[in-house]
Length: 263
Image 1 (cartoon, one colour):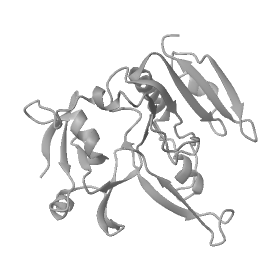
Image 2 (cartoon, one colour; image 1 turned 90 degrees about the vertical axis):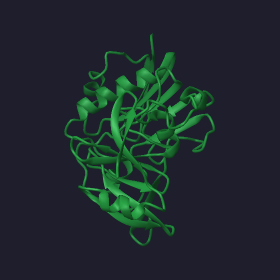
Image 3 (cartoon, helix red, strand yellow; image 1 turned 45 degrees about the vertical axis):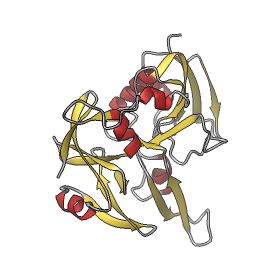
Image 4 (tube, helix red, strand yellow; image 1 turned 30 degrees about the vertical axis):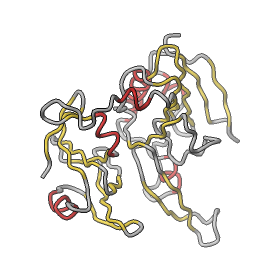
């Protein structure tokens, strides 16, 4: 069912989830997954290698990590520009640099885009590892005791493995999860995500990837709340020093730091 493709520069197995093959795809999956329905259309929920639940919609590609049998979804346009079939020919003939040259800004973990004034700015690619609608209990927000958030990235991506070529962007926003401790069904975990046990390696690789796809002289804006992890510990994970920063929030715990590549 799954066919070999090359995810430049590594090889993966992948299948596109379509109306015609949805039942066969479902039957071919192993590990943690579930079928569902969204607005009258079939979806799949798969557990990624990081323990996150990701939603696969019609047209998305399901990429398989053959070593551990976990999956992650990739939007069709990203897969077609970033992957090649066995013959070495891209699924799409388009050059990824041509597609993204008009979008100089990347948010690598946009979440609900809460920090953006314009949540659909035409110059920005909004990326995140999650694509889901979550409703959790929160008596402080609505009379019915629930609260809903929508995470709807333009592109599904892992900030540790950003699917774009070197030096593609002028500005990158990096606002990763900052909580080590959060209840599994809590509003805080749903909104901000939760750090993995290997979070230091994750953030270190995230910085490295952001600087890789940032052009020389480009700007990285990094946001961190140090309620549980001090910003000093996080800055030890990158050799690049910020130029300046600002503290915000009611408790003065949120740090905005600005880096320039090559400075």
